[in-house]
Length: 407
Image (cartoon, rainbow, N blue to C red):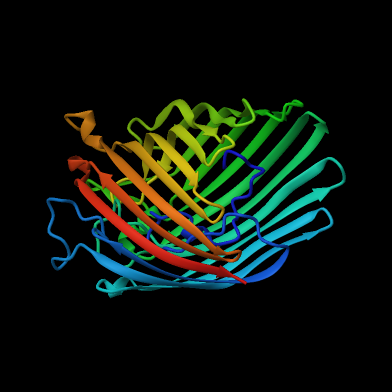
């Protein structure tokens, strides 16, 4: 679940375009909540990537090609409607992505998202959410030049009850299903079901402290063959964590969801692992034009690889935003993440089952008119590689330019 459960993940423009370094969509969202009612959206974008398929430095690229440029067209409808104490937010968007050289990757994307933020009486509130996203899966950990579309389906129900002005209990259940187009990637098809309960305390200062108990169950319908054996990637993960949203001052916020996690998964070394798990974020927003943020995390995460399904990620990131003028904003971000792979082989060196991802991006957003945006950006990504798992070192650079209108 996201750290701030009250802040909805559904933006008024599709999540496929939320960052300059997303692949391959290049449009960018409107960051502010839109006017009440129905709006039409449209966008056009162009991007260039000098290592589109994330080919390792020591490998021969596909037909001698590494780079490519592509164009994106978006069209859709945005709904944001408040009726009494109920709010409905929805986006329906279609995208057409065309590549100049790797035209076998051309595809039509879909992004359908809807959330109902409900309230009943004085003490009950929550969220009902559903989404369907079809997009091209990343090639960071998958060596191929074939099109590999990924479909994600999600249903979520969250409900809270205010026991007292300062106390609240909440519970949620969610189901995420991922399916992949390519036969070689079908071993990553999975369904994840999560159940969560939380007791929250919110004093008059506005800060929030909560105790969260969570269970995640993952099911992989296709067994992944490895070394003449067939292993299951099914898992169960139990968590007990503290959630903190501390308003340290008028300009400083510290957010965290940290605690203990135990993961039972037959393909992970001896079959189980446990320990510290979570994420901490610091935000500093003074009254000037600059704001800053930093994050640290240690989390389990899925990986779209042929060989493994899970990594234990340890990482850090820095970000900054500069509001240059009322219409121009510049965002910058840099991150480092070390990935510890699901160990299935006996290696002479534990380091062989680790690699690292480094990324950096900068994006400039120009609000030409109240409902028209132009975005330009640059992104960099690199991987150190793991020889035992057949992944090598690579570097990639991407530039983008896009324009969006909401009318």
